[in-house]
Length: 555
Image (cartoon, rainbow, N blue to C red):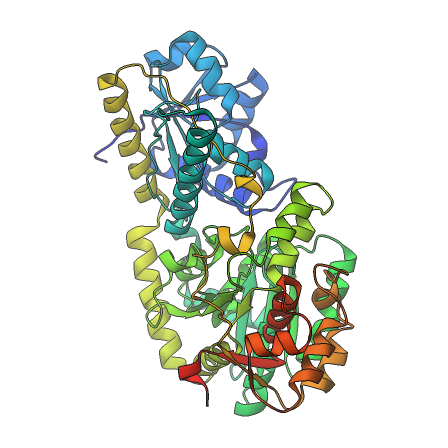
């Protein structure tokens, strides 16, 4: 190892355990600890936190992961010992201001703090990111961005905050934290595919050799992770067009019975030809068998909560070809046409979501409704999706080649020991900046920057943004399928008189008739030439009731 462990870990059990909550941040934190135990199995690691109970919990977790070294624990705010040892503190989220304030009261140059991005769409996360341009943070602190999309969002927000402060107060000096892009890691050996395990898993899952098994693993939440309706519709088309027996495994945990029932209703309505299997994400044995028995992994995130996407990288480590949405962090990890397919995504134009942000900012809407309403206007291109799933369902050799490519890529780039070496290198670089820097006074911020229009804030996430001159073409059976979709909770849950009206889809389809029109002309004719109308139009496209194409692509 070229760089030894040279950073302490701020330890809070919730950030490194999935015992109470299975979310991306907790899953990544749990894998991080396993990676630490693998990378430095006999070293003296440093933990920082409030109280000895956390120290014991951290030590026990490391031991369970194979660690045989020692743990040096520092109770906060004993910054003297931290400064005298590693000189850098890893914090498992965007760094809390309280840590930096406390450090600065002791000595601003005592140590560096390196936090890490996860979800950036929540109010709390945006506030934390916005605060980084202000005191108490210093240029020798860092926010690790887990994807290029996360970096772009952070830089955009920082620029806007600096401009706002300059205009409002005449401020000219701001903090400039380091913003390296370092992806999350996976513990590759845990996912290495083995032929005998695959055979056993297929037997347990009762999957025949002629069945093609598509797997989604993760949070089973249509409003907060990925709406599965587009996958259901595409798999149904694959099953009918190719006569291939299709199995869809959904491995994870439903937040509640209502959401589970919504999934079951959608499966019955949208994909009657597909055989569905649910695997409880809390059953580690069965969960692992789902991965071992699958042929293709699918994760079509359409949610602004996502900034990296860990499960596609885990799928590549398991030797599976992957089909993902062309969305934020997925763009960094999955090579389209090599490791699998990235399906184009489309958002409404900037300015179409200011009311969504205002409702959430004023706490008139919950966070779930905010991200859910944004999701319903995010389109995963149905045509490209069906084509990709068809190729992988009918071409075993392609599945094998893509799976092998993804496996090699993950082992070379995303294994935790490789990622942790980059963390250690960053800690070393921050130490040099800290040593050479002079103490400076810095500041920053902007009006409602953290509650801005999601279609503007996240405009760089999708492949394209729809324009007013794009051509709208109805599907032949749209009116019939609309009735079914309107009854599904995962499709209608965010209807609202002024945000996404229930009667809007029918109005637009009636005005459209069997003709093609431009987006702008259709919305004007329907009396819906406003943000709600645009989101309603995207809703119709999301569920494949019509097709919208740029003029040059129109038939």
